[in-house]
Length: 472
Ligand code: B12
Ligand code: SF4
Figure 1: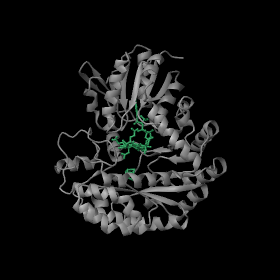
Figure 2: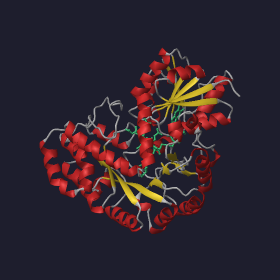
Figure 3: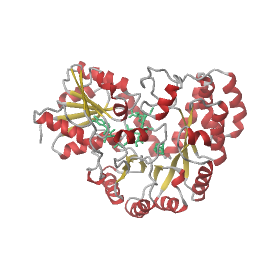
Figure 4: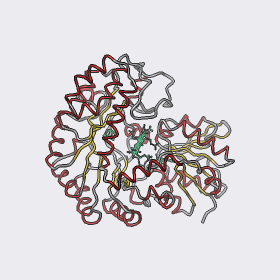
């Protein structure tokens, strides 16, 4: 066993596959690691663990939480190297200028953090390690990116051993899995095109684990901790017919649990849907984004036609698979008429679970640049204002109040058309207010309960989860 110890601290009690994956690579190389979900006892426990390196995964909007967590580390007398990775560190490497951070990791973290831990273990100079930026008393060192992990089957399964300490997570009926990395599309609002560009055209960006490798991992988790339902968090689960065919036949035989996936409608055909149905897929999530086909394709570069959405919805209904749609309100220069068109499209296809976010402008994305150039977001915007998918208080657009109201009524009017005339009137005439927000929060709660397919035991788990969150 090596001397150097690595602690990870995450904010929310969900399986964070990124850090679990890095942790398993470190363990395989003889390092001790541990993952904490931040709570009251965390800092004392991290101190007793005597961590040498403390790693944080950072999503845009989480940076303030990370800074406050680092302060608590220092207050507890913990003197370890702090490394921040994940999407925000990748697209906003300026984070390294914050003096409380020693290192940031851009892109994939497995072998970058491993090399860093080895360098500290062996007292070697770490400053040339690829993917890493260093802040040495104000002097910044920036290293280039290393190639992506090409064969995902070579990675050990994510280290889920923190289930042994967080029993409520072990009992979580939903387990999250990732079967691949990368997406071939270039939607302007998503991190994929930005990451692809960062790695360059020649990089093998789209990678998939073999179906057998995935089934083996699911079997192991099912055996050790139990699984009620699976959420495959891949951006595109149904990309390849051959992969899906192989997966579906083993899954039914060896796992046999309901599952949910994300995919695009243009890749869904009857053959794929039949494999999904036969193997137990309960819910398919896909993006409509906006009901305006021209905006969807010209501004968002989604490359999805309305007719492809209608066709996929019909096929999913034919096979009795429920569907959740992702929709966005608050696109650049969006009018209230455009936003209502999005809601009307959901009414028309009979979406079971219409999910609506307010547009999030993440640094590094094409749409962020365009909105900034058009003066829709302030020049010094650095993502600190981002936080929840459902808020956007920084878009400098005249109709932002009306758009916020439409968002508040979006779920309810997508399901109940008769509510639309009143919702239109209220959205136009009133300022955003707490009553409208409560209407949104209530409809979102119902959507979440339906999405989770709650049974009594799951409901009890959900209550325990929140009590646990409150007590930590
Ligand atoms: C599943 C998922 C979720 C789940 C679980 C999140 C979690 N904590 O794991 C839920 C639904 C809870 C969720 C919530 C959110 N998510 Co989310 N999510 C995803 C999704 C679909 C998969 C994540 C995943 O497991 N990827 C696979 C792993 C292997 O990759 P990875 O996480 O990027 O990790 C690698 C590197 O980033 C790096 N790395 C990551 N952490 C660290 C830490 C250290 C120390 C180091 C060295 C390296 C490192 O190494 C890892 C291995 O190579 C991604 C999209 C995607 N395809 O990645 C979006 C994504 C990560 N989410 C995103 C966002 C914005 C969020 C939210 C902030 C949304 C919100 N406003 O509430 C929250 C934040 C939650 C939180 N604080 O943890 C964005 C991030 C964009 C950005 N610029 O930050 C993404 C990229 C989607 C997008 N639309 O662009 N999410
Ligand atoms: S298809 Fe989905 S995952 Fe792929 S780039 Fe577009 S939004 Fe991102």
